Length: 85
Image (cartoon, rainbow, N blue to C red):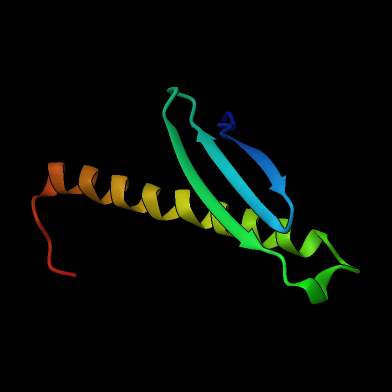
């Protein structure tokens, strides 16, 4: 069995205490699902500035996961018809 590979590219932009992240999930069939995340660094976090990056990245990664679930659900519905969850 050959393993399939999908990739996620993370783009981080910082401006002052604000961090914005874009995460792009790419599948083997060239489907791209993009998620975004934002964080505002609390002044108390200055000794650990990566906290804002980590939070924004976590939010950006959660977003395409939710979008992928929606796309998958729609695909399932096309084959099976509506379901009641």
